[in-house]
Amino acid sequence: MAAAAVSTASSAAVTNKSHLSSSLDKPFSSPSQKLLSLAAKTLPKPYHHHHRTLITAASKNPLTDVVSSKPNPDGHSFDSYFDDDDKPREECGVVGIYGDSEASRLCYLALHALQHRGQEGAGIVCVNDNVLKSITGVGLVSDVFSESKLGQLPGDLAIGHVRYSTAGSSMLKNVQPFVASYRFGSVGVAHNGNLVNYKQLRNELEENGSIFNTSSDTEVVLHLIAISKARPFLLRIVEACEKIEGAYSMVFATEDKLVAVRDPYGFRPLVMGRRSNGAVVFASETCALDLIEATYEREVLPGEVVVVDKEGVQSICLMPHPEPKSCIFEHIYFALPNSVVFGRSVYESRRAFGEILATEAPVECDVVIAVPDSGVVAALGYAAKAGVPFQQGLIRSHYVGRTFIEPSQKIRDFGVKLKLSPVRAVLEGKRVVVVDDSIVRGTTSSKIVRLLKEAGAKEVHMRIASPPIIASCYYGVDTPSSEELISNRMSVEEIREYIGSDSLAFLPIESLNKMLGSDSKSYCYACFSGNYPVEPTGKVKRIGDFMDDGLSGDMDSIDGGWLPGSSKVQKKTILNEVRTS
Image (cartoon, rainbow, N blue to C red; front, side, top):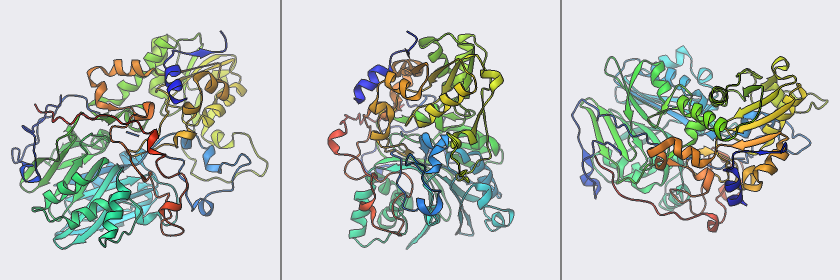
């Protein structure tokens, strides 16, 4: 069925009307060979190849009944009626700043810029006089921090984190950055991504006496650093990262160093910039650099460790890295349009997606609208290419929280109506093309189509600026299990019938690859193909703290949280060549 969905999705439409330019000069065969110093106070030259993964969702949370509203008659919780819940979710965003006396305040502002990557927890760790001080909290960045709290975080070195997770009163202990003390000092870490061998590593560590305080895979990294016998400290990080598999873009704060690490495949983004006073900044997206007036310099390379201290900037090769496999969904949905991700403008990517849809899946229409906000740029591209006016046919409310008092007399599509309001003057009597970034379960799309037709649209034609999602992700993105993904169960025509649109077309993956050109092989498409660059094996923790958090049961008792039978996972040969300049 999955294969059929992919091949069918490549069709234009179904209607019912008829070189890594690196500063690393050679491969390294052992940790002792990995220290490679660059010019003491300069960063490696930017590399200009546009290097570029998605994890399971529908997370079952045992705390849902405590913090959420009663289920609706169709069995879904009320929150599932919000359109955002029918989208993949990014796990989090990270920031690191070295060399600015206002480090914590700059970190706070940068986290604001990354708020779209996580809205349920935020934290900052600052270093002052060789002491790591941490403040974390549940909620938005502006909820967690105040002027008085930031005043408690002096120092010129800070790291920060915004987190997406399932809700829960005990979530605070899982909010990063984490800080740990061990025999040689203290270290803080903020992590974006997901480790596919988390369960195995945690079991091994617990058998050897390690005690875990959270249900986060990030804590495993701290334990591996603590038990490492490597010297100096930087090689402890290298040794720990050699044992973990999956996606990780991490920033570490020690008593005198800021360290940034990216996994060998470069799954999740991480960029480096510099402020006019020389302060070095790391962030998940360039939009964070823009806000704090830091100039973008380059990406942290896949498989690279960058160390910043009073001696300047040094680069360490973490391990021989294969061809990058960066997450294509950063360009489809996660990143802000004003960011440059994997060396490519997100705005230009999304506009190109819309243009491709207009070329390959044209339809006679009077107006083009978007599902805001993530569909807007693709809709602009579609409208420009098709020569049809773009208008705001759906207005989004930005003031709706995660929970809401439901009316006693049920209103159909109530949750979607809270967030999206149709504009009758734009829609009435019109043939409408509506552009969205993706379809996951299809529940929100069907409600949007119904809203538009009830507002007077004569025809509704859905255009999706991504290929069909047929597989779960295990690399730091919250997506439903494969069984819940509508494109894994239905053909394009069946989906069209389900959502009630007059036509439906997805972005053909062949056209996506053509648009990306020589960079296409540097992206991960596991969610569209089921072919995983790093094969998940055994039991793999999904995103968030959907596990018991110490309140009930154990990890193995949580339904739906683990990788299906390994026979379903397609093995893939990975190229393990070191790419050098």
